[in-house]
Image (cartoon, rainbow, N blue to C red; front, side):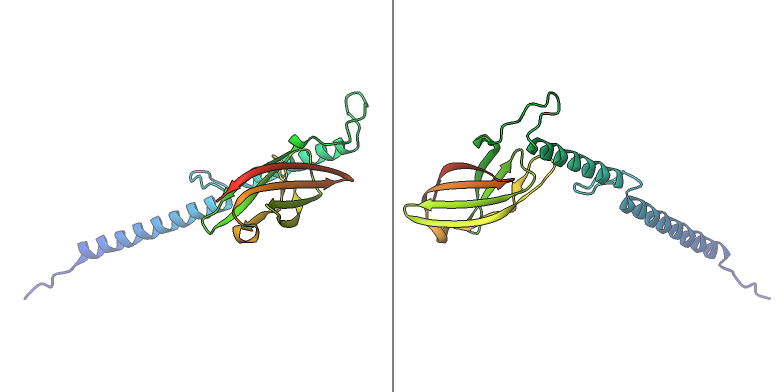
Length: 181
């Protein structure tokens, strides 16, 4: 009589392998879910904020906005003396960045502004370009919503870039000169 050979050790190995892989997959899924939910912080992905970080950023943003708006009431919280109603031109910082598509982005940083309107004017040897945008409040500094101008609209040369910001009835202007080729 011939004995039939069984594959019990091989079958047991395959079962153990399948169980091990299944457990590993479940652990990976749990880890990814916890990272995505912000519970764990083992993977630092720039731009991803935890719920606590988002709350803290929102609180900081609201605190800054409240501070800027309280300054606009023209009262100093310490001694009740009126604050100046005119803004300094240093409250508006302008810079430019040449883009690869042949346009120019006008970058703005606005100190002491929480709202208002930005009016941009570019003059290049008699060619004038104008555009308006709202003030965009941000925690560290406010900015104009955005200005990206094609060089074809004004031409290359010496651009006189003027930005007027109107907020709470006050107007402040800053002008820079930039050579655009």
